[in-house]
Amino acid sequence: MEPVKAPATLMEAIQYFSDPLTCIQFFAALRWEDGQAVCPRCHSKRASFLSTRLMWKCLACKKQFSIKIGTIFEDSPIGLDKWLCAMFLIANCKNGVSSYEIARDLHITQKSAWFMLQRIRHAMHTGTFNKLSGQIEADETFIGGKARNMHSDKRAAKITGRGPKDKAIVAGILERGGNVHAVVVPTRRKQALQAEIREHVLAGSAIFTDELKSYEGLDEFQHEVINHAVAYVDGEIHTNGMENFWSLLKRGLHGTYVSVEPFHLYRYLDEQVFRFNKRHTTDADRFVQLCSGVSGKRLTWDQLTGKDDTSRPDKDVVSDV
Ligand SMILES: [Zn+2]
Image (cartoon, rainbow, N blue to C red):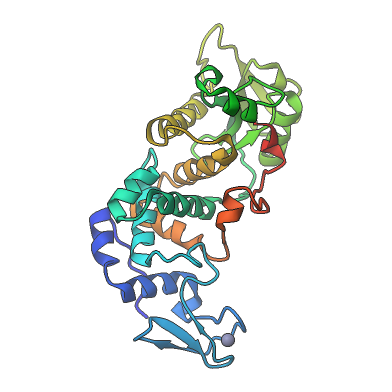
């Protein structure tokens, strides 16, 4: 197989992936060592490619398998040409891409496009990285519509318990010049916010926050507070990097997606975090990194719509938003 050559622009991607065999070769080269197919059933590397069927036949267990097995594409009737173009779009559009746009561009239904996008976001979930260090900004923000604009049934269904009634709270931690970590939290209280900081920031790092009382007591860090009632910046004491991330997130959520169920909010966070943390690379590289994340991940319709929520990493956390 040829080495992976990723398209640099959407135009190139559309052209490049218009050939089904190219799609398979491209993805096989990313997925398997030297592009050598591995049987999903018996893990044998002895498989021959059936060029008429665009599938492999395992020479050990004699079963046939497609490139989609064991990835977010499994069971999808949509071709890899469309999947890969959708992935190119979502990897590189700063404000995200709505399911309506994808549906129009790829000639599929909006429901299919929505399902595709949620599975792509599942692949964008990067999980844990090394602890953040150096200069850190921590901040939190509210996400969500106004309850008074909601129908009363919907309001009753969504609003249960604590916090500003109709809003979800997102905690963010940013290493200046590096990665951001953002997650839905149940409250703005000390315990919730500081747990995230302790889990994701190296002790001894400099942490900049606003004057919210929940940040008091971060004693193992060099904690500096900017009092927003007085000033927004005091030398290096500010949270402008986090503010920048929040504005990107909200531009996507409010501008592109218009409305996001609180239930699905963490997936949109994953999407924005993915793009933000790979902001210093090229469109082609960001796309390849996304493609590298689709194997070993599956997301079924039932998991996505809540009938089976085992795929939700923070299912306990968001139960009240
Ligand atoms: Zn096999």
